[in-house]
Image (cartoon, rainbow, N blue to C red; front, side):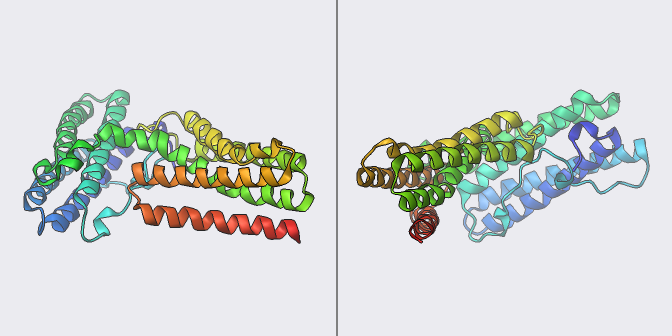
Length: 318
């Protein structure tokens, strides 16, 4: 993957053409998926598809003027900094709330890409076109945010998230949730294995502390190196890494602290209560910010926690 800063003007235009073509096809799928239940929204997405097609034609025309007939194939997955998109257009029936959020995020991402590209280009005609596209993508963003409000129940209207809220989820909630899940679940095995193996709360505490710190450092670096966030607004990679690492360590420390108690049975029960609370918090966050159903989120998190806990206990008593 190339860094955005390493792209030439020719490659930036080629990438812009690819992005517009992808957005055009996504909007076409949105329109098809919403046509039966939400014809007004489907018509709006069809209009946005036509506008994205117009953007692509203008970009291709300028590319041919500047660089000739051959357009290199450069896709979003070839450039570092783009967010991986969920394939909502493959799901039927489409949920209007999920489509609105995804459309808003797409427009914010594309607009930020054009802003970054316009700021570094030295060609006046390229910059003029990119500036025009920035304004048009901003209009798309506003239309996506207002998508079909009259068809949503009042309770959903009150809780609607704006596009920037979606980016907040990408920047803060996702790395924090990934860290909390890893810290809360993965450290269960070493902590409880040490506890059952030694029956010594101090030694279990030291193992849990080491596991939590190690997992926090590992997850922090993994998140920081995964995406530089330059095009998506996900924030500085090291800030995300710090959030992810801190939440990972916090998830492990939570059920490690009870082992500061000297009474082994009391410490064990207290740690168990903390584990249940941690898994409950993770389930709530997934339901609140990631749109996961309560039951599915609870089963997924609970099953993983139980399996890791049993693994630690079996190793500890063996």
